[in-house]
Length: 80
Image: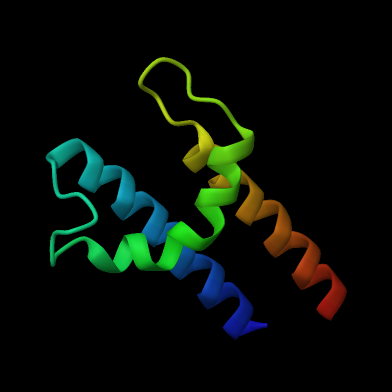
């Protein structure tokens, strides 16, 4: 169970780092922020194709953050 919690924590941190990089202008090609894009793009890309943006705000990251919490809860309860 510790590995599951750790994995979901790393994904949440990567999402947060990705948001920060979009604010400070790092982007996916910066060597400092590339890791967050590598860890999160595989599940954000399908969400972006389904969830429209609101103006310039991409809410797929917010949906992914809460979705990770729900999936973590389901996985942890299945392991108990």
